[in-house]
Image (cartoon, rainbow, N blue to C red; front, side, top):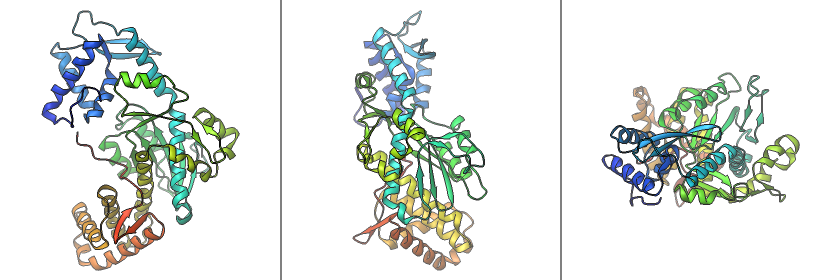
Length: 408
């Protein structure tokens, strides 16, 4: 990020950091797009809502001004130099803002394609070992969702659970809003259960917790906005201008196993008119090599953790239920901190389980039975290659936790 400090600013330094960064932007241009600036500051590990608070303080203190300019059919807010009347953005900033916002509007098809490719990659790796696993592209699935005929961005099945997939490739830091309600619409408790999956750049703790606790679903933070360099050849200069190179990544077309280049629009067309082009999953899995490694690792981690969480929902008696919770703690630890021996994993998983769940007094009396069942689950995950063991160390296979903890 241009002009940033060497490390994430501490909270007491954030106001000064935001103010000085904005001052540099306004030294060069009379007005700067507010929402793009908040996105830029995430590169310095400052939440968008925190940047918004600081901008409001600067405005109240007369240190900056604000204005709104109609661009692309919407009124876009700008932070300006503290002049009366507030200056309008110059032609360079106006054009770049219009182009970036247009890119966000047009990139959804490509983002749905990249998510589908990553899911196909995971299926190609473990699908043969997981009962009834399947991955499908975007489309309507009313026969699987009790008549809901919305177009889904993707679809998975694990065991006896349906998993409608939503993809958000925008700049917002998602909170509980319209997207959450959409996920609620896809949550079905009766058999076969439907538990939604959201793949987005970043979402707050509230929506993640609600999706997990209330919907038996999951939110995956990819930490990146993806686009296709072929369909947006001039965007690189815009990203440089707005210091967004670490947040937005442009990729070449994604090439199928049969040699077809997909850029987003032709993927959307293939869903309806040429489904053989994007099925079976192995046809798309090869294109995952083009995706950012961390993007694939987080989606892989999310799918595998989703599967681990399903052990709880399929448990038939108390020991299985409690052991599945210990297993969840173990797998979360492996995704976050890496390898550990089986004894260490069981000890740490048990400690996390007893810390997380208050009503475990009777579980302490049955620890041996519960951990024996947990060992059986671990062995099953090894056989299904959701876990791997190397040099007596357990690892979540080629995966990173889908919900990263940030220092800001």
